[in-house]
Image (cartoon, rainbow, N blue to C red; front, side):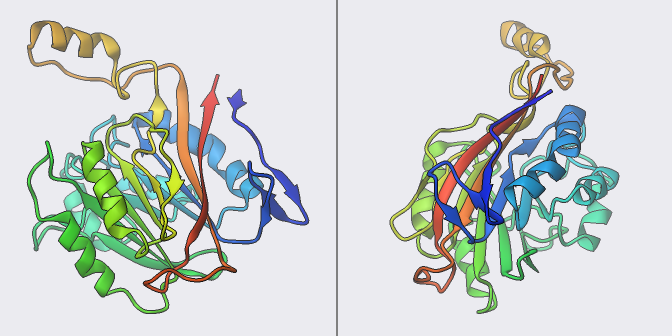
Length: 291
């Protein structure tokens, strides 16, 4: 069975946990999808969430969809077919070699935009949400304790400068190891984008908030997949690796399958931010389980 609080509705409008009914744009971001358990809960649960929560745009990080390491063309098509509008990536984007030829032909599958010039694929996507609002998704990767690729802060500047003026909503997925780098990115982009959410660690943080200039922020959305292991992998193999330090093959864990997401609501009636984009009015962590 599934667990997770369901929304109330009034007059066709979603009522959030603050008790307010709003007609603003609603965006669901799904945390790192890990292996078949992660894909299965998205398949089983997403359609109901979209209908009940009246979601306008769905974004998910999919770089761990293939047995915890990378994503394949078939799995990318499968996830996009479930109702996900844009898939973001990270340091595992290239783990499956077959994705190299596929990515340039599927603009809705992103990889971090601050990979060096000439890397296959794109780091941003612009589209139109179900409510008719034009949006952009920007994927960046941090450099602390990860491969030191191009500067994500300056890449954010360059990507934002190229966006069409009619893009009203901008979300940034900062795929990074350290909380400090992600928090710094949140402050750096406050008032310039609608939302900055972190991925990569597979552990949900509890610091969701709307920053002073209207940017929704969360350090890490967490993981969609089995929480009965160690960040999605079988715990026995991980513990053994810590004990003996020897190479080991990691398999996706089982048990306590969760779908960790964040719901962002925009303030459509209020003043736009300094960059002319929609401000966020609310950000809420959501967790659904299969028991």
